[in-house]
Length: 164
Image 1 (cartoon, one colour):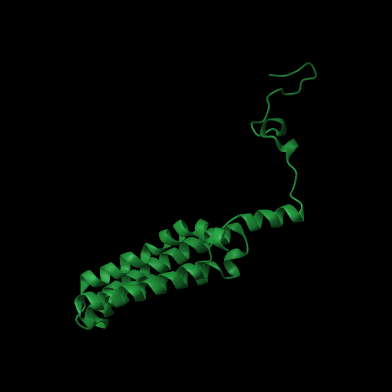
Image 2: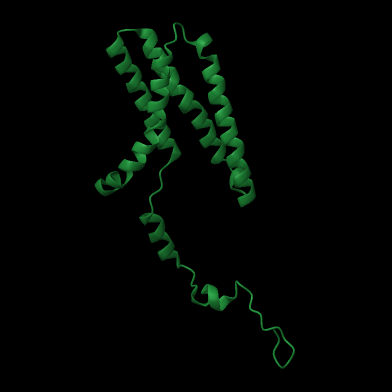
């Protein structure tokens, strides 16, 4: 479709008038700071510390419930099979290289996620050789409970923020 001057009258789908770009106003420094303060950010290191603490508690509870030290070591090893790879993942994601540009950040995320999965699998395959008298149920309980700490942190985050 053309007008009398021969120009095309077909509008681009992302034309400014349709997307509302004319109403876009950048935030001031104060507004940006207020937005940062109001949004909740959970440090991966805090989550890892919580996972390590819960993993230790699971190991102690396992020892108390079973009376077997080997079951406690198995539960602790299961927790470490979550915490050690996750710490490596967090370290990789917080490096300067992964924050250079969006493409590097996405590639870094996938790379470190694969490293995390690979290390977790390697630790699980090595468990029978590394933990004397390995108790698979205790190790799996330690592994699963430690993984679920992330959900507990997310659930408690709004409540903790109100208390602070």
